[in-house]
Length: 176
Ligand SMILES: CC(C)(COP(=O)(O)OP(=O)(O)OC[C@H]1O[C@@H](n2cnc3c(N)ncnc32)[C@H](O)[C@@H]1OP(=O)(O)O)[C@@H](O)C(=O)NCCC(=O)NCCS
Image (cartoon, rainbow, N blue to C red; front, side, top):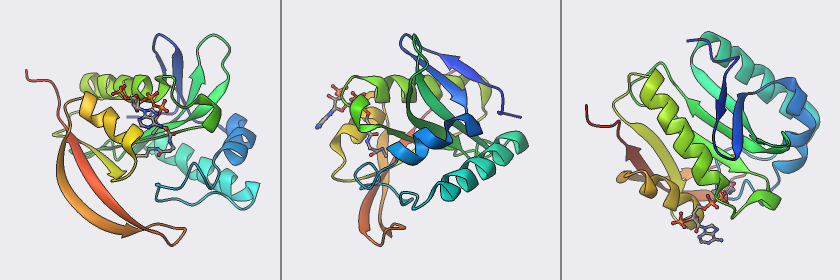
């Protein structure tokens, strides 16, 4: 499935396939603080963001990824990025980060819930993965609100060289 032209609408948000239009926003907002608990490290120069968007757009077109930006519905203000990776497999992986100024307003949960609902309608999956660093409590509450269960735990060294203790939540499709 080509995911390069998708917009999901929620009460407050638009979740829209990524394009180069957002390179400055992503470069500016994906900071060291935001990346603390994440695998990727922040871009050192805008060319790194451009490369990330280029490869994401190719993967969206090839149907192996749905990499999106999260926007405020009313104003189309950039809020962050969200994704379902490996959508062609039985265990696609959810991911999200929002810019600091937009934390704590319920947008994270709203965006991930919408991605899960989109997956329920459009993908044939066994479970969605939601790997999260143990100490990242705001993020952990998102899969928990979707009925996710911790199925695996492991340590991983992220691209910034920090060892993260990862809890891997599995979130299941609705019972038919
Ligand atoms: C994780 C993240 C996406 C959450 O998005 P958000 O919009 O800030 O979170 P929400 O407002 O939807 O709140 C989600 C839950 O966290 C809780 N929460 C929010 N801020 C919190 C805080 N500082 N401490 C503890 N809990 C917090 C909320 O109460 C809510 O729980 P509830 O639904 O049980 O009440 C966002 O904080 C973020 O981008 N963080 C940096 C990147 C990151 O860690 N991404 C996740 C990778 S797995």
